[in-house]
Length: 134
Image 1 (cartoon, one colour):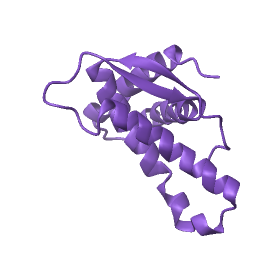
Image 2 (cartoon, helix red, strand yellow):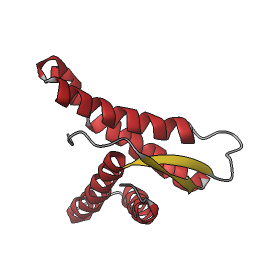
Image 3 (spheres, helix red, strand yellow):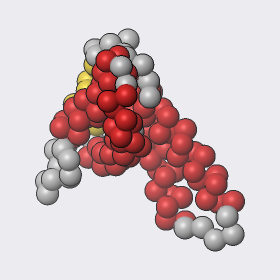
Image 4 (cartoon, rainbow, N blue to C red):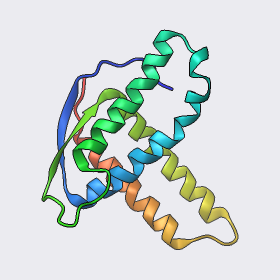
């Protein structure tokens, strides 16, 4: 869990296919941090706040792009990126690369999963290159 970050955000326009990948990866970030809530009463106020920021930032992204793709997705949508959320995406990008290495090393592996994660990693890399937060 990252420490408290300033909440200033920059807006980045994303197309529908990027929004789809961003939506899935954002939900994975939320899922990956859920276990911290099991002992949230044991945390001090600063740690509780740091956890809340991860969720607030992710919910802001999901609210901007939509929790699921609409029937007629917008051409582009402006998505708020904070420094903390960008760091969470960088970690997801790193995890995606290592997950694919592990999958390909297995005797049997699912090409579709590897391709999906490779596309997500490339998209996150391109997206993060456009994010300028301080």
